[in-house]
Image (tube, rainbow over all chains, first blue to last red):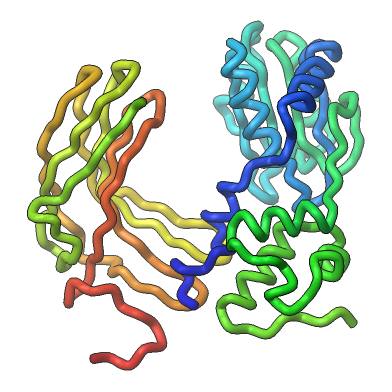
Length: 195
Length: 124
């Protein structure tokens, strides 16, 4: 199967949105507001943090918040200069949503948390709990993996040669890696087997 | 409902490097955009992150809520459209109404033959 036909191509997988129903979205935003618009989305790699913070930014914007979504590329150890300038200048109406803030050095994180007190809010994603209160801790399940596979490919995980439970366990809940393995299967490579 | 359509002249899809691509963009939007950008671009699709590059762009400021405009852009010499198991490179013309981001696009193929190059397939 060619890359452009592969249902697990990154561009297609990225279209899958985080699965929260309206009631849970309302709870999440209410909790964020109760925390003074400051909180952390915590979860391991491939658990949906980026997808959730993107969707949260859209939800907050739809509710009239001025939002700024900052995506820190893998390995990036500082905030973009324009973000630092905006935070240093004080942006009382702006909610900053910083994806992968956990990869910033401690000194920069402390500066971010302090500077953002003059902003409209701060939401970060991180692999583990930190200085901000946890807004939501993300977990994945074989059922979520199964639902995503069905959404992007129209097929059951079992049709690729293993169960959702086995695939989920092998990748320790990292859905991104599990879907990449299925990409390889569609590209004609054999499925990895648990050792 | 907001809609943007991109139509390539003559319904063409296959182009050769260095040729011109022309067509019409038409739009009907709920909110008047501040500008409309027509972009000739390529992007990759595959297992990893996607690469995107805009080769040429025309901007129409204050285009109004509804209308249509023609465009004409020169296609660069490279890269060519191709597809393999790990990565595909695709060309398209897209029109985006800013700042809302409403978009429409028309796919196209760029190669010396005007057909997508399939990696791993014997040449015809």
